[in-house]
Image 1 (cartoon, protein in one colour):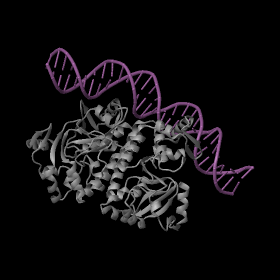
Image 2 (cartoon, each protein chain N blue to C red):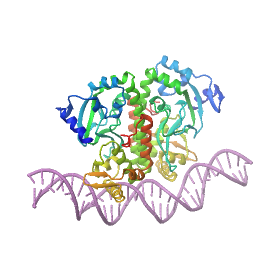
Image 3 (tube, rainbow over the protein chains, first blue to last red):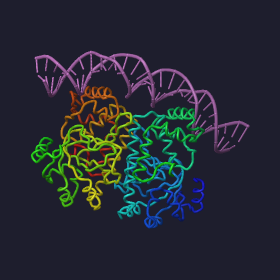
Image 4 (cartoon, protein in one colour):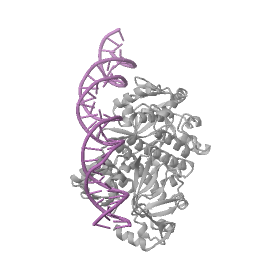
Length: 265
Length: 265
DNA sequence: GAACAAATGTGGGCTATCGCACATACAGAA
DNA sequence: TTCTGTATGTGCGATAGCCCACATTTGTTC
């Protein structure tokens, strides 16, 4: 699924300023993103000309903290993390956005910038829209408006749960939660990510992730190899995760009418 | 200031269903809340008939997690905490709302309920508005609409910072941050709150708060007595706090055009 | 297929915080 | 004033996660 999508996109691409930008975006492609897929046909048709496909490498930075945002992004196959960077240099993830959402909410909320960095956690594609175009569509007060507000609340729930989880749960359970959130937003069981990357997301030491990953592998829930982790027993992983994962999943479903989970993806 | 306000309110109160509800609310009272104070006169005039004053005791619950919200509240002298309660019974605060904000954002965002409890952390008054009335005003797309969206982003920043702070900072620094957030939203240096209460907010043991408070008292930043903590050296407290406090304060100022701090209150 | 860099595995000492078990002190009610 | 419940102070063992230092493995490049 992932591969076939990537192939379709690449067929249409032309290189512009270092990013690959699609010459044409079809309704079918656009509906890969759940937010866009929720729009009525005519609303969507109006937006399509304003969307272009961009391809992101692992680690690419969409916004730096405090940056003026010129574009917003609807991820299709990419996954983007919102990362907070402390003065000390240590980092922690506050939320994750995949094909269930949009990167750049503060454009429509009115803050224009945020205090965190948006960085690509899993390489892939996203649909890009100019800030002015998004704002204009939002101002119409139509379905996109309400959808983005509901998405805002869903994201707030995720961030809140992260706050609580950081405080109260051991690394191993948090790792399960994090793997599940990523797994939900991918079309494969093979997660391309190093322990070091994950440790930055969870705000812990790399060794902590190595240890936790070993334990999960021993329990047969995942398998490890250099640079990738593979989900072996998805249900087992859900059992091993703290309640936080389930709470967020249920809330996304309730607020947005879909489940941020591959079970309905 | 606090006392005089309370007196004014009480003069006007009539008891309704266990809460004291003002018979009349003046522009002057209403402007005690910064969000309302930011509205243009005519927008505010239209809202005033829909507002009533309520008096909250320490510990009062405005919403339980998952509750349908019938009202939203603009705190004036009260402070409200958004508390998350885990299955295990342990709790953690995800955000705090005083006369700088509104309790019940999910009404306008469209989620209708949230996963957290809103509980009064410091007794005082708030202005209450029916859910339908708030939504109607919000739908007009006027200044209140934009203001609440900007406030949403400010609150998201606070929640994010809480998430990061929980992960990376020692209790003592977190306590400073928390005391400052409360101090900013009060008109007195005397904070009526037990160590036990604070420990529930920060998601740590009560003993951890006792220890941290002792250290802060030794440094001459606060003084302790049974059931109250008094801010002695506000500037010193800011120095002793982690960067999180300053980040949030600056962001509130930037996004909303005021400082969630007594220095400009 | 050798060399190299990056990723992972492992160990040891350290510290903050936890969990539990009490002792003490204060404030309001009787 | 005395009583009593609540709030606070204190100690101690347990532990999760930290910091630091390396050994080992694995892909990639030349």
